[in-house]
Length: 226
Image (cartoon, rainbow, N blue to C red; front, side, top):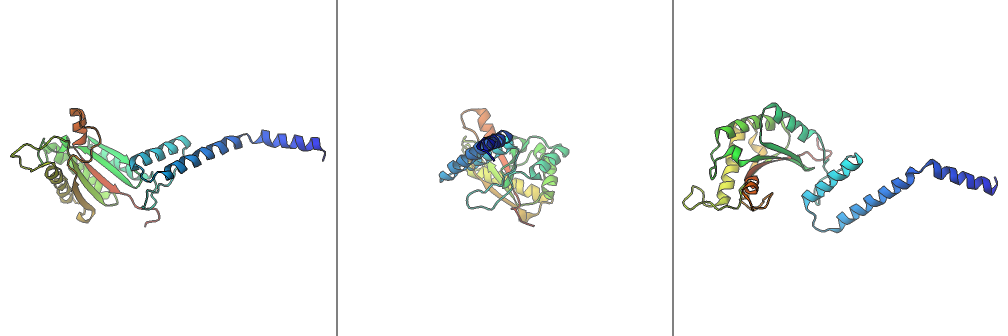
């Protein structure tokens, strides 16, 4: 083979696989991204999962998430989708569903369940939990119930000493309601966080209303679990 023939052959190879350059660039960008993530000793879990979701949406792939010190979980499975579908079937409104990789979080506005400053379920709250409990009975995994308030202090002489007591009482009220509707008690736990785990700044009534919430943390099964 002559030198000219070799030059022609090399040109043909380069022309036949232009995607290799794009593929190599993409791999370099992804490698850099993961190196940067690894470089941070403390990574916000919510930001981490948001980044993973963005990558999956951009490249239409499914990546396993490995939070520090935890087991591998698929970031997307059928749990959240099925819960959303069942909640719609039960006509339960005012509940948002988020998939955080190793768990699914259901968030309910406290106004749907309780009157201001109270821990007794309203009629609307009872109906909402009746529908939600039928969904949770069939969903696998443990269920941790979290009560949250805004930063407004409890009035003097109130039934509850402070927001710690109020948020915990609400979480326990919801737990007992779910147990009464057939959710196995060994799957349930409850915690009150008062105003110390906000999802919005307490600088307006709208944001305070967002912080007054009850969350249901449904743990997913790890990869390889039966």
